[in-house]
Length: 206
Image (cartoon, rainbow, N blue to C red):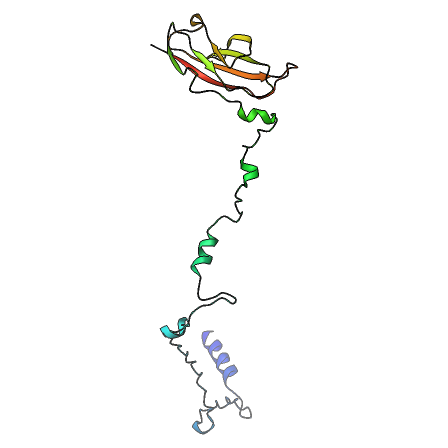
């Protein structure tokens, strides 16, 4: 049985006389004459720019001198001194404005002569003595109104109307090591206040 199978297989694989076996197509061969040359890619060459120190920043000519249009190259010392002075001119008072002295706003013209008489007024005194307040007289004053206050600001003596320009305080009004202040202003014939209050300080010393 095995032999029969082998024979059948051999008969099937054996070609007939008229049959031709297919031939394989010839493979193309490399022909040096027809070879297409391959172009090599050109490698770009980077250009190196060398920057020198002279090209980094332009320089000025050695003789260059900056100037501003309209400015003078020479400066007068007189102009420079005047430029440092204040822009507002200071006027010199004339004889008409400086004599008599200026009148304080809100006061009568006669009040320019009303002030404390420092030579006659007491500034420091011993406890138990009587200090004196003094001031100058002015035209048109009929009397003067006087007050005395302690260092806390409390009025301890008031409603003193006198025609004289001095007043002597009682020693009992004062305490040791305390400061006091007196004030005075003039009154006209109608009893109206003529000037602002003037005054000074008195200190009790040990």
